[in-house]
Image (cartoon, rainbow, N blue to C red; front, side):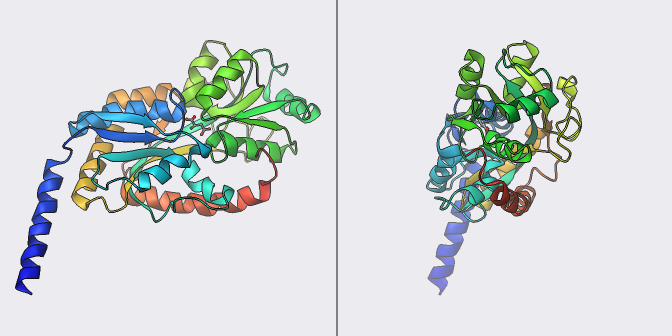
Length: 321
Ligand code: ASP
């Protein structure tokens, strides 16, 4: 008995000492999509801010594929010591309704560090796509549904969700073209090989501002400060249409509490970091409030979003696969 107690105490102090030392090496931050895209952009800014706060380099590692579901499956198998993390988005809550079987359980297989940022989406198209406003775009897609193509980042991506909701709302089943992220999808929009997509402002803002693509509407309830010229889709013809791409940081299940606490503190510092906040705002995004950048803030939201999207996706099911 005594020996067990001593062993338990030794373990406890070892975990404490380990947590005090953490981080002992650079931290990897998985991104479930291709480099250069919207999630990657948020991750690279977050890596700078969190790295500064925690005193270690945070290296972004792109683990794209299967609509963003490969990265969480990979994270699940990593050593739970805080040195491997993942930044994932709304897809964590839509994948359970989209996949017959997933290699991870969003609500059981992870430790939850906190939410980071909410990102609106934008309807954009190749520069010579004929319609000039949102209403015209809706009519054009409906009329030309057999020849129009929609780009997305795979089943479970935000661009997939937005397309699914949009195409089901206008009852047009068009050909969809999946990519490993909206960075490569954007290349094909720029090159004119694919017609349109709904993508996050963290990827589209620069292209919209430089006039290299056409833009029609945002998916937020109200106008986005940095893209004031675009109406919300809900006001421009699709009442009630709203998609906000929330993001969260995850760690493998079993990461010690003192390590989680350090990561949460670094996340809290990041959402208050003037440079991070300014960059996110410039890209049309909003960092979350302090109460959301917590383990409960992320897990509760994830649960609420799974409950929200599952019936909607099942109902819209046939579109944009
Ligand atoms: N977030 C994805 C990316 O970074 C795109 C998407 O979810 O639609 O490419």
